Image (cartoon, rainbow, N blue to C red; front, side, top):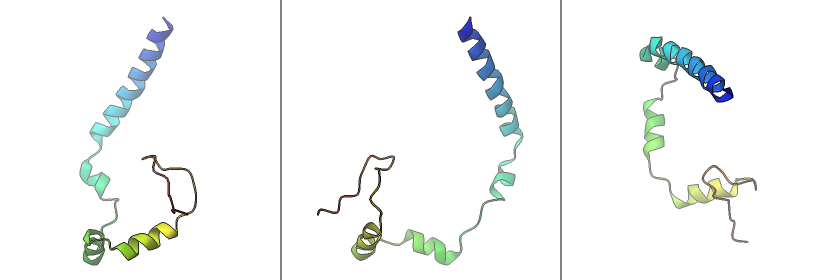
Length: 76
C-alpha cells in the first residue's frame, strides 16, 4: 500500500514535468544559449600539445577524484 502511494506520487510528479517539457519549443530553449565565435570554435577544435597539457595539470589543486575516479598523480 505504501509503495502504491509512492508510485502514484512520482507518476503524477513526472507526468506533469513531461507535459511542460513537451510544450517547450526547442528553438526557444536554444535561443538562451550563447554562441561561440569562429575563433572560439577553432580554438576548441585544435590539438592539445604536451606543454599545454602539462601546464593545465600542474595548475590543478590536490583534491578528490572526479566522476571518472581518476586522481591527479604528480609522480612525486
